[in-house]
Image (tube, rainbow, N blue to C red; front, side, top):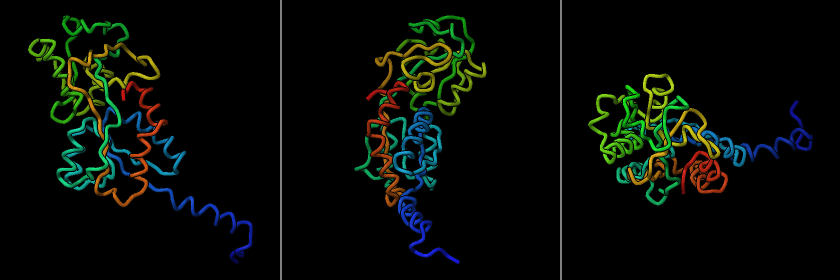
Amino acid sequence: MLPSPKHPLTLALLVLLPSLSMADEVKVAVAANFQQPLEEIAKSFKQDTGNTLLISAGSTGKLFTQIQNGAPFEVMISADSKTPKKLVKSELALADTQFTYAKGQLVLWSADSTKVDAAGAVLKSASYSHLAVGNPKTAPYGAAAFEALDKLGLTSTVSAKLVQGENIMQVQQFVESGNAELGFVALSQVYKDGKITKGSAWIVPASLYSPLTQDAVLLKKGEDNPAATALLNYLKGNKAKSIMHSYGYLD
């Protein structure tokens, strides 16, 4: 026998169901450098809105190709501003939703806490055999690394030592596993709350590479999902910004 409309259980369900019906999922394509911060933001976002993020991380270029090929992503959180613009131009994203959520920083990093000096002079030394970098064609941080090497006049010197990763997370894995003594990664991967969390690192001067301006955009497949729009708005808010700052991102 079903409870009557006046039954306490029925009243409780009637109160609860509207809030449950508002909760939704958002399929998010995120650049590898921002995966960890986004996972932390996702917890706060769910607590505040009830909405869940389904996160797929990878190199910006690879995610762009997946979206072109029909991947069901609703929001793109890129490691650059060019890729969201390309998505808009291809009519795969909505132009008026694109915005810069953060600016990233490039670091030279080693899992060895004594390896990298405060001026990055280790790059010019003979104390390492392999230097990991992201694929410059698909990973903006990889492109920034090559730009920095060029400005330092080290491109030809280190060319025989280079180990290329598909994305910035793979670069970190190369260094952590010992397959490369050094690697160029995003500061967010090795930094939290004002300090390097593991190994040693040199924050590459911003003058050595083009700004890592990172944009987000609503994809066409998310235009009818209020939770997708809510996520983009959330990224502009103080809670999300505070998390980003804790990982070394700049406004």
